[in-house]
Image 1 (tube, helix red, strand yellow):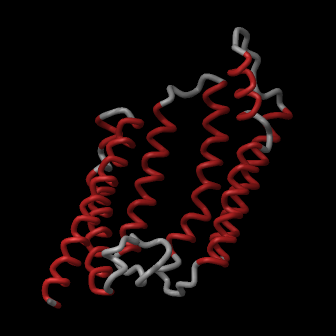
Image 2: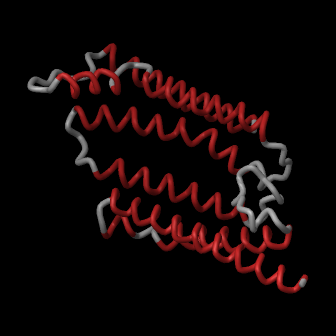
Length: 215
């Protein structure tokens, strides 16, 4: 966890440094004709410490949550919180860079969406690898009435969930090269919803079968 915290702090500090440097050099560039609402939004997202402050707050909360609410000690059980601590800082750094490139006219808008897609896809891949061995009753597991009713059901449901998450992350890798990045992200999110529903149904079926065996 210490490495994750150090990495998150470094990325947040880098985001702050970039924001201050841009501001000191006349960022953002002037643009006329903006509505009051868009002008206010522009001032917020280009404030020197906005992205660093936002992502630092999120990472700080995740660190607190990990230390006070998660008791799992295994390597895989701690993998998701470790990745989660770094993820907001990395997204904040990408957002800081993208906003500057966009306002200076160096991006077409799809590049950031593709980068975010692969960042999210990587997180899904890690999460799929983790949940296969998630401890029974884990706070970051798939908790339903059925999965919490028996350790065997929990294990089998999470094995199915994890394998499907890994499969979804791998299968959708080529999508950003075939369709716009935003649509690719929605496709991946749709697959995650289908996988979650399928896991819920599978766990209920297992619980029903186990109930019949006991009667």
